[in-house]
Image (cartoon, rainbow, N blue to C red):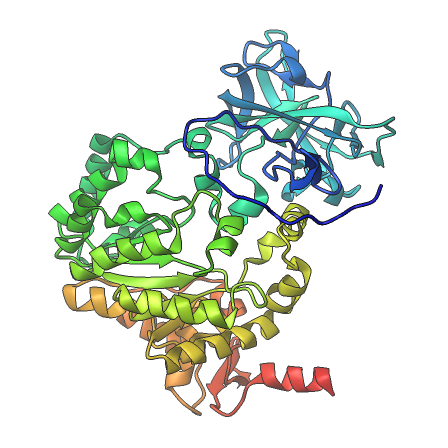
Length: 552
């Protein structure tokens, strides 16, 4: 078949409501529509099971996956609880697609076919089927005569193989809540929840907010629970970390792993209720978001009126609208986020622009970087934080969909995440460029923590500390800065621990193993317990030394 390029003769917008459809296809991810080559829908669930796979239902029967429907009740497991409690989950949405790529997992009592990306619960946690090995053990329920679970069994994998298929087969999956898992052929598997590509960028919540829904407690409940904690405020105590955090008045943070300001929040006001509660008792709050809802008047007032201090981290990875639509479909545009930011800064709320992740060759185009700088500056932002792509984003589905969007994920990820020290060095140069533009910069990247403008990674310590707020100084970022502040003088862990305790924080047992590299930090010797003693030499940077050795 010959292909020819044709000129576009006209473009027009259809303003009336029109039904539209799309396909999900494998391999080339495109098809011909009206003789024009178009891209397919890239949001298909990658976790799927073939027809006749038996799903364990809550009523004790087993049902073929192709016959599962919305509202069905399935057996799931609360994997966040060490007791592994059996719970009922409700099917929210059904999905299907075509594939010819299946893996067969066999244990002593179970045989399961599934797509390579489908994750299974093992003694190592959730593992993709194509990354399992013969040492892995999977959990299965043991049922009594009454069909209730009497105990859990761990079964060792006996074989892993590729399924023989004759052409493409329709495969299925579903979303279920509250637990995002179910039993297929007696093996605990993950449901199709958030697309791994979008979730790696924390934007899957905007993709399908209706399906993901809103997670919350009743306001009366969380207010009562918070009231129980408030007596610890400002008191020097030894006890559970939560109570100690309240005693130090460490800011309560919204939006760490979930977007709290989806469209449904505009209707329900659950987060707003909580923000108003914290404002009423003058307890410090910090918000992470990509949503423009935070700029609505009632949300602005809940933050601006909080006498304990308030700050917002607004994630904005680029000013390139086309790139943002690829990486953050459904999320507010850069311009809308900046309008929300302007409303906050005009009201006196500290807003920190957050570039997370910083991706070399992706969101570092000079034109859009300058446009980004102009946009955040006009919105009243003076502080920026950065981080690189989380290493957990190495899932095959992330790379595949990045490449479908025309992004060379492998090159970017190799430099920024696989080569952690090199990614740290590249990010450090980007930070220095932003500093030259007059911004205060900080990062969560440990290698660059010595050059942070703020000893707290989040560019907010000057907001909370004068108002009585606090932080735990027992973390690797502050440890690196403590070594730096002592210059060439050796620093022992005992000295740092005394510094932390003086400020009321606590030191984790694993910290001494985590703090082992950063710009300018060098090992000096060992203390009596065998722990490394560190010192700071400004001219030293092992990252540059490694790069020089690499290019020789």
